[in-house]
Image (cartoon, rainbow, N blue to C red; front, side):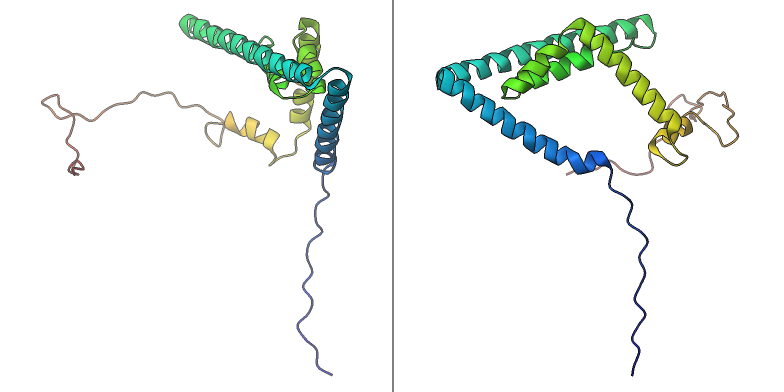
Length: 186
């Protein structure tokens, strides 16, 4: 009896996260529910009414995204003129998400998008999101994505920041040294 090569052993496959397991199922269920709800509304009224609802949601969503984008750009511009760091989004991100949900065809996404445009809901979701992100970053293990934020702050291995200035080498005539390579021409 001959023996062959030993069967290779593979390391255990990491467990699939719940999000990766249930997200495709949730998206599929959401799409089926949206289509079913649109057909129910079309049966109760008419297809033209559904078309007008979808068109109104798209136009309103585009207007909301435009307004939130302008406000975010204005806040950034003012912060740059003051020379300070920009303030937190102030609900611009959630407002843009609400506009995007309004633009997606469907009545459930429109309802959620309209809900995200209400200021108390924006504040509550903003606080919840901030707490969740902070907690996840504190729980992050070394070598993970959360640890990368900590590593970005370290400038040198010993944590010291070296102050300095840039000195350009110039020729005595005041001209910068010529590039030894000739320019590319056709």
